[in-house]
Each structure stands twice: as structure tokens, then as C-alpha cells.
Image 1 (cartoon, rainbow, N blue to C red):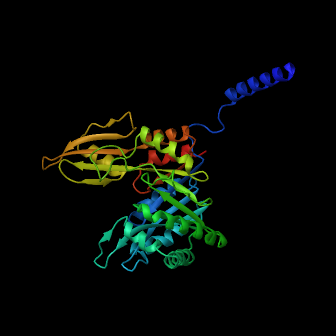
Image 2 (tube, rainbow, N blue to C red; image 1 turned 90 degrees about the vertical axis):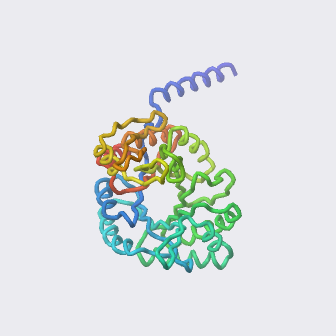
Length: 344
């Protein structure tokens, strides 16, 4: 008995030493899969970015399906213009999938839209018949336009609608599987993921942004503490979820609204205004202040390649190496190169 225990201690000690020598199977900060969104309203520059990193992406999400006033799927003219070019590039990209992303934005006849409308989700999910009708329409859109899967980005979901929405996910997934199609589901940080019994099978994407934005005063889209807190919650998600990071940033006008900026726009603005760029240690984001010609003060925060590198590393340290990027279009070459380097 003593001999067996001794051998066991020696074996455990050797295993620990070997683990220290070999280290983790995956380098910290290195992504195992990389996906990105391409939005219909910015498809030209989005395709330019896609062409630069197409060999590194495992999937592309075309953010392009909305709803009309009858609660039916709605596609913009930009979508129809972009689709042939996207699918043409897809044929030579090595991508596993191109998904159609559906978001609960509703367009009115006037052209105005209600973004992230929770009442729309209530109506779509309210009955067995409404859920089946919605699923039928999604599947028909996949077959009509040639996508490999559906991604559902339903946000601001009311607490009382989650049970029906979970039923919808559970019913839709096997129907898509029968047709050789995939399902991805995007989750907001506000979603009570610890309490939701999300079905096994679909890929899940956790949004790691909106810490600051158009809803707040100046600050980074995410910081290290925010990402760490989020990854600590993600263990409740089925499978191996993606964690999504948002590039670009915002320009906050003193006493006014925030304006979204791409990384290229923010960089150009800093040069044009002769601003001094500083880096925030807590988030890795860069920021600067400037005074416009009308003497109104502005503050800009945005993410560059170093920011992305830090965010990816923090998530990787927590064991999450599948990253998604919102969104392609006017990213600087250095950031695109960074993404290619991280996927190995």
C-alpha cells in the first residue's frame, strides 16, 4: 500500500512538472476561430477588409435582414446590391459558412426604423403558429439567397418572452440541421444567461461591448474588468461560445449626442485636429480630446490593433479563443494584420 501511494505521488509530481514544461495546449491570446460581420450599409469597404483577412476567417455573418411593418423579413437595396459580390468572394475565401444575420429592427413605410424592438419579438414568439411562420420564412430566405445558416440577433428581449424564444430556438435548430444549415444565436450582456436553459446545438455569440456608447458618456466599448466578468458568466452557455468585440468607437460632443466612428475615421480625425492620443490602461483603448470649429469640445474613444490584442488576450486567458468582430469596414491595415496573426 505504501509503495502504491509513493508511486502515485511520483506520478502526480511528474505530471505537474511535464505540464509546466509543455504549458497550455493553446497560447494565451491566440484565437482558435475567427468570424466577422459585414453590414449591408457598409458593404464596399467591408468587402475590402474581408479580402485582406479572408484566409483567416472561419465564418462571415452578413448583417442584412430586418422586418417590415407586417412583421415579415425585409431586405434593403444595399443587400441586393452586395449579395452577388459577397457570395462571389465567398467561393474563393475558404470560409466554412456565410450566415444571414437577422436583427429585430423594424422598418416603417416612411423609411424610419425602430431598432431592437422588443414588441416585435413578443409578436413573433407569441404562439405556436407565429413561431412556425417565422421559422418557415427564415428557412425560405436561406434557400432563396444561398446562405449556409441563420444568425439571430434578437436584442432587448422582454423577460416574459424568453420561454417562447427558447422554444423557438429548440424547434428551429433541428429543422435547419435537416437542410444542412447552421444556427448561431447572439446574446447581449444584459441577457440572464445563467438562468436560461439554452438548447444544445446552436453556436452562441456573447457580445463583449456596449460598456460605453451612444447610451452613455465617453468611455471604451469594453475594458479588461468587463471582459473578465463576462467570461466568468459564459460557463453557463452550451458548447464553445464565441466572444464578440466591437471595433471603431464614438465621438462625444459636449452636451450633445455621440457619433459612431470607424477606426479609420477616428485615426484621421485625430490627425486633422492635431490631437494627442493617449491609451487607457484599464481597457487598452485609445482616446483624445479636441475642440471643433464651433468651439464645442469633443472626446473620442476607439479601439486600435493594440486594443483588440489586449481584449483577445484577456478572453483567451479565461479559456475563450473563438472571437467575432463587429464589424468589417474601414479597419486599419494594422488591425487586420493583428487578426490574421492571432488565428494560428
